[in-house]
Amino acid sequence: MRTVPKKKSFACHDEVSTARQLLLDAFDRYVYNHLPTHLLRISDMTLVTRDEIWEVFQPKINAITDAVIKEGLRSCWVRQETIRRYLKYAILSHRWGVREPQFYVLSSQRHGQKPTPAGPGYEKLVRFCEKAKKYGCEYVWSDTCCINKESSPELEEAIRSMYRWYEGAEVCIVYLAQSSSLEDFGAEPWFTRGWALQELLAPKRMRFYGKDWKPLCTGDEEDEGDEESPQSANDKDNRSILDAISNVTGITQQNIQNFRPSCSMVAVRMRWASKRKTTRIEDVAYSLMGIFDVSMPIAYGEGERAFYRLLEVIAQTYEESDFFAWAGEPSPWSLAFPSSPASYGRIDPEVASTVDDTWCGDSSYAITKRGLELKVLIVPMKLAHDSSATFTGPTVSTRGRALSTWLTFPDPNGFDKLAIVNFDRSGTDRGRLSVGKVYFGLVLAGPMNKAYMRSPIDKVLTFSPQKELNGRLELVCLMHRWL
View (cartoon, rainbow, N blue to C red):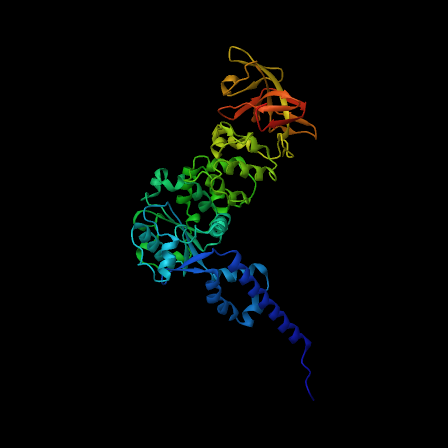
């Protein structure tokens, strides 16, 4: 009697075939959308493209047995992690030095057109590759030699994708050339560079090395020749390093370990960047795109306008009032926007965390042709000639300073309004100030048909009411230009 094959076996075969195809599709997407455009192959110090990576690893992915696929490669997350284990690469974070190896040098070396590069920059690259091999990586990425900066499309893709490339690396190896111990972090230039901020926050796993490529983690076994310890080592789990980094940067240990890019905590994140510098002015903005998870066109040559455009993009989705918690020089393109992240650093550190509270102020502010429209709680005031301030509203404490001393250019007529931005919401058109809470405000000059000028102040104006106030909110427009 002939045995009829069970339909279940056919179904099982079809299921495995489908899972295999999903794995191959995920592999294609990962190579061409998540890997850097070029990687450096450690074995022969040769630059390779995504196509070449695909040719090397596609047979290995295809060789995964049906049993393995049937066992656990049906979910999207498992497929992604499986592919990442095959395509591991290490990424370098460092401060540029002299005679760094450039893309055109290594690409010419690949075709035998030039001799092997040399110098301190190339020596750093070689030492980086040696460390990367200890983490099981056959490929590495460095911003010195893995970006073809002569190609505008490739350069733009690199800038837009930089955060994801650091996030997707097996390990980020940080070389701090000026540090011999954690005590040197305060004077380490790496902590003052704009691009280094996302290079600190994005990676899931980091290893810090100082002078002579010695690990900065106390008690590291690597110096004793243990080749296994680096496989699981992660300095983001080291309390001593976390303490040292947090003290230097002002970033909480939780954010260092588990940062998530998004349009949130704008004032906090801008303060992280407020003392950092970049060689190109535009990079002040471009280096923050990944941190805020936003995208915008890259246009070197636009100068400070890049930061203005970044704020425009953020304002389109961000809803919290701390967006306005800045002081100092306004943007040349709008008096309603700050000129740089440094403007967000002009706040008393003792009250900064209270100003950053959510669910306060107007969440529906919007950019218009005239300016930035938002609802505020107005406290009318008049600046007297003796540099004091009188209020028609509640008595407030401005932390020991006469209000007029906060103004860079007081209204010569003496008439201004104090606009409370992070008021407590008590309805769609009403706000409340509570005793004991800290608020911040803008000094407005005007108005002209509900249009105000934001008067420049040298520090964010913060204060505490001495009695509760409830009031109707007023829609104002902070003008882009002088009236």
